[in-house]
Image 1 (cartoon, rainbow, N blue to C red):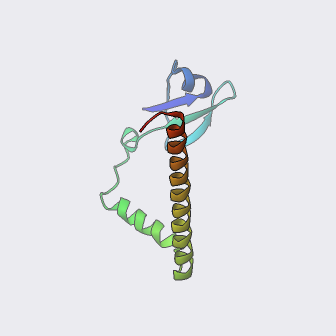
Image 2 (image 1 turned 30 degrees about the horizontal axis):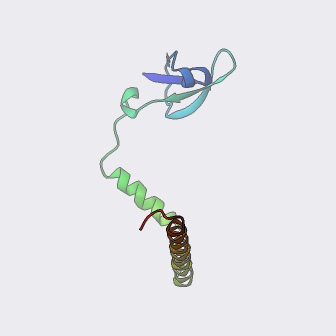
Image 3 (image 1 turned 120 degrees about the vertical axis):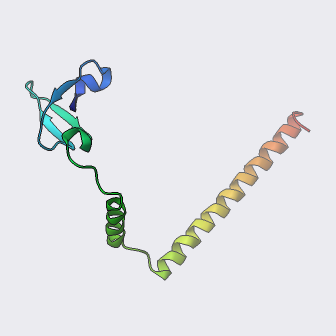
Length: 111
């Protein structure tokens, strides 16, 4: 069973129609009225076998091989940037807290 969602029934969830297709993981189909419909299905609904347990990890490994990892110089630069920004935000937060505390003490609120 495939569920077709168009712009009218996504918001209202009023109508859900069924359609059949050979392979409709997540694709757009045109309806009779000229609009587009989003088709979503699960593998088991179409009778395809579920993936093997380790195929996910093979896919993850394949994607990680495509990643361009930073070299040592870039990593030091990025780490330094993060530490400096954290220190600056700490100082600004501390200064704001100190200012608000002194302001409340002048008004007479707090200890």
